[in-house]
Length: 239
Ligand SMILES: Nc1ncnc2c1ncn2[C@@H]1O[C@H](COP(=O)(O)OP(=O)(O)OP(=O)(O)O)[C@@H](O)[C@H]1O
Image (cartoon, rainbow, N blue to C red; front, side, top):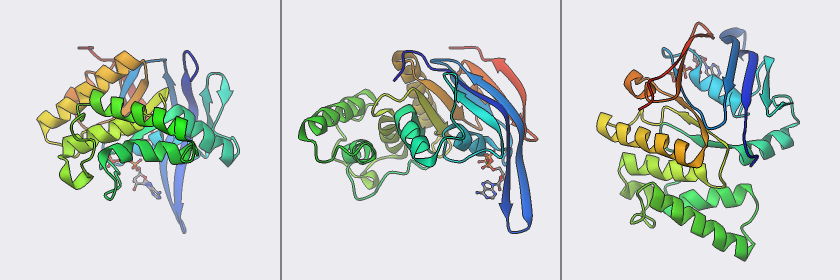
């Protein structure tokens, strides 16, 4: 990880095509994310919030426009480099956790990272990564749930495990798509507060999509997507 990181998007456009049907979604999005900043993304359903996260995290490519990381254009890299950069720089958190049901919580945090970085056979790195995963589980409040399977965890606990998984390897930027969307309000608030605390203590930038405007106000900045563009951004009242 570099000492500081700066991500920006310039004129991002995206249209989905299904057969003859075209679904224009983003019409020229400009965005800057400073190192260690937490940015909430709000906007009505279908306004393109998930699409924007997918483009920023190199899960999909824009039709036009640029994504720049620390002065280097990254949206047009060859696929192998995109994957490598994605694994090194970004952590992802999803609304429905995406935990593998047959693995324990600790294995869910550890194994995707080990597989992505091809360290399954390396005993010493494996031991160090296991310690990192256990420490992250402890930090998110799941120190006594290491060997539970997802079906044995509550929704809030599953999301906490997913947060620990996203932080493995110290990514510089976490992209979270409605991380509280499947949780009751007080559990969602706890998960949001945890993200905010981790954002500050680890200086990890976070871009978090949410429908909850009260939670969004607790980010450093709120941007609203509407009609395929960023219609508004403002500094939120930090708590
Ligand atoms: N892979 C795809 N192929 C075709 N259309 C898509 C695809 N992904 C998204 N869309 C369409 O693009 C539009 C924007 O979708 P997106 O998921 O980015 O919106 P969103 O703001 O995240 O919505 P929500 O708040 O409901 O999750 C929607 O109309 C959706 O149906």
